Amino acid sequence: MTRALSLTVNGTAVEVEVDPDTPLLTVLRNDLGLLGSRFGCGMALCGACFVTMDGAVVPSCDTPVWSAEGTDVVTVEGLGADGRLHPVQQALLDEQAAQCGFCISGIAVAAAALLARDPHPDEPAVVEALDRNLCRCGAHGRIVRAVVRAGEARP
Image (tube, rainbow, N blue to C red; front, side, top):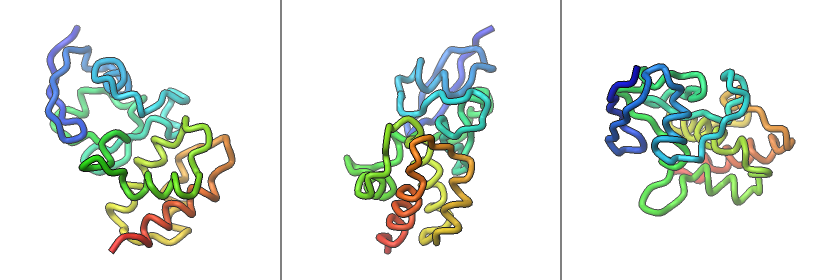
């Protein structure tokens, strides 16, 4: 059974008519056209679908959309502002850390959440924060350097 749900996604209030048990990722991609979050494992294990809900990193493939009602959802598309990339996104590009690009949106979201709670993380903190993000390209070293770089660039 479908019903209308009100969400706030990337700072914009939206309403969708869906089965409340539909995965948040499906709603983001299919109903809202936000294609940055990827379907990876579908079991909340790889991090390709990570978004934040009220600042907490969640796997959108395993999160029913009803649980996002009344929260502030941020996808990779919502990280930047005023036409500028988020510092993490810029640092990932500068370090050439976005290899195939499949997992990088979830990594960018998790890294931005880390910087929101720890503006200047050291390498061990970045490694711990990104532990749930799997990348088959082997770019983890560059990714960690990029996130540390993004933190160092902040005032």
